[in-house]
Image (cartoon, rainbow, N blue to C red):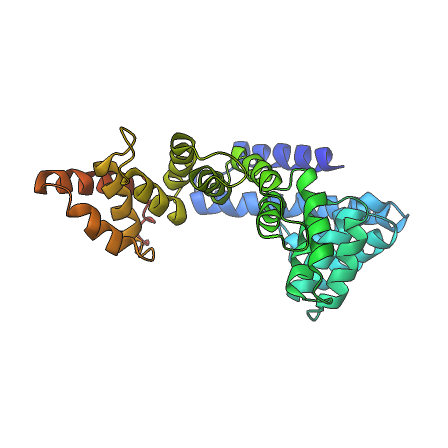
Length: 313
């Protein structure tokens, strides 16, 4: 059914563009009309199947009403169809309904009901539901605070590759929150999330190697992970890398790069970065300080967000 919707949409839009007038406004209007027709056809087809008891079609109807893509959104109707699918065992519908209920979309916000439906989906192995259920249990929102159960659900989601859950269970293993402290296991989970590109996890891997937590101290490994996170804009890593590179550890340190990362962190108002920067600059010549600032300028230029186009008159 999803493939058919995509095929219909692609064919109809391509046909509309091929036959469209040269007026760009008219082209847009024609494309929108064709898109509405495609979504209406998809809705009609899925409604017929859903009313006959097809669970996937019930979820599709809920998605069409919820998205407002091509047709006016109707969140209350989306919830009604998601609930019908969830009551027939569809974990994805139970998860989507729980999120909508939690945020008060289509119905009054009800965190207790959200937890109930998240649990339905989580017990069927839905990783996003497991992670969000763990979030709510750890916060005591919609249910009594339960760190032990929260940790179990974070672990279940993490084992399925859910990135936020991997970082969450790693931090809990670090701090012994709802689970016995285990810095070696914590580092392993941090590394799994870090290798997926999570800057916060990359910082944590660097920190563990920097401090020798769950592994031996390794300045080079720490700097490598800090740098990956710092390049991605993680303020913790920028500051930590600046501090690490500024320490007199044989041939390891680099006072100019250290100064540049502290400059970057200070410009972002990272706590204590300005003070550390002033200390680092006292050890440098004016030319070296200028080199440091140029490196910081280069970083900002590489990471500058594109400016929005000017508004039309």
